[in-house]
Image 1: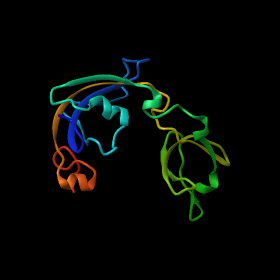
Image 2: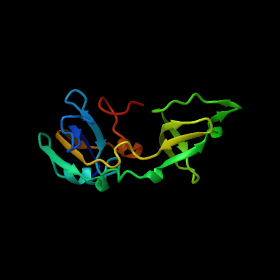
Image 3: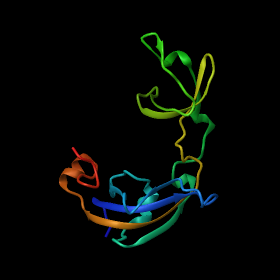
Image 4: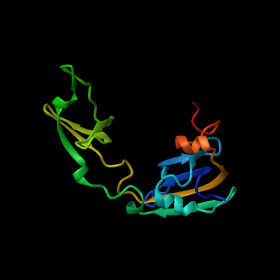
Length: 165
C-alpha cells in the first residue's frame, strides 16, 4: 500500500479535459514513473489522490490549475535586456522556444522559455509549461516497496527503475 517513504512505480496518461485525445505526457508499462512517495517530489494533490493504493489499483482524477501548477500569469512573462545574454562580450545564440535556466534576484534558479527576441530585448515566459491547465490523470500502480535508507537520504529512487550512481 502506498504510504510515506515508499517507492511507487506507476503508469499514467496525462490529458486536459478540453482535449482528451491529445496526450500531454505519459508513463507506460515499458517505462513506468518511479518516485518516493511523501517527500514532496510530486504535486501534493496528485499524491493525495494515490494515497493508500496498492499494486494493480487504477486511478482517474482531475486537478484544477490551482491544485496543479497555478493559473497562467502575464506577470511571469518578462522582458529582459539582451545584454544579459552575453558571456565575455559574446552574445549567446538565442532562439524562440528554447528553455533556459535563469537566476532571479533572490538567487533562485528558474526556467524560462524564450517567446520573443528583438534587437534589444529577450522576452521570457517563466510560467510552468502546464500553468493554467486542468489536468486529467489516468493510470495504474505497478510497484510499491519501502524506500531504502540510501534512497531516502538521496531523495530519489535507485536501481534499475531509478537513478544509477
